[in-house]
Image (cartoon, rainbow, N blue to C red):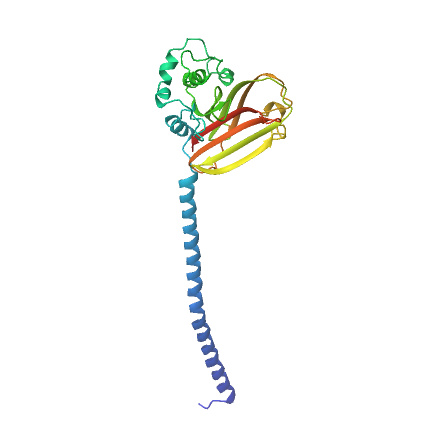
Amino acid sequence: MNSTPGDTSTNIYARVSRDKADVIVDMQTPNSSRMISRRFIRLTFVLILMIGITTVYVTLFQHPPPDQLMEMNKRGAKDFDISVFNDDNADDRTDDDVKDRDKSEDDTNDEDLMEKDDEVASRRGPKRREAKGDKSKLKGSVAWNRFIQDNGHTAIGVVFDRCEKPTEQLGTVIMLPDPEFGGVKSRTFYNFTLYNDLEGGTFHVEVRYNGQDLYDNWWEICEMEEDLEPQNRTFSCPIRKGRQSLIKDKHIPGYLPKGRYQSKAWVNTEQGELLVCGFSDFVL
């Protein structure tokens, strides 16, 4: 059969088209493989990142439940008669004086310290009482220690009349479960006498994490909680002279990493006179 010019051009076009298609297929195949490889690399990277984040969270930020946290802090409770923040309060008392705490408490009278911790009564703290015959102990410490023991509280801090070489314990700080926000919270109790009206002053705080300085700041006491209702503030100015009692709850944020936290907080009057000084020491 004789082919016509039209037939020849058609065959040539068909062959060229097939060749182009083969080239296109040959070019697309490596690109597809590279795309699959890139996707695999991305997915692998994301997976490794997720595993890393999960590991960091579990290692640093996943805290035990409240009851375990409180038990950990109860087992590691410090003798807060000596500052846990620095050695400034470590006066001439010896270790034997500290170890004799329970013995000296047994020698005190049986005066009723406080109502049971079933209602609001436990929030008022103990009545003032001094240890008799034990000059090495801080004034008021026996009563506050008995308050902790009788109510099964977990002590994580203390309030003194001074930051250095205190002479009287004015209050205590405990750890409790926080049903409102979850996790745990601190509750601070203290009682002291103000001999003059207080129109203003400053509140200072220093915090350490695992022994390293973490944070320090100060505020005007009459301005630091302006966003709260007066009844919910730590200080509502002016503060009238007389006997002062405070019960203050503070949520301990769950986003804090695991570790040991130590804090020191104190209040000065406008004239620079120290009113109270508190220390806390706990682990998360």
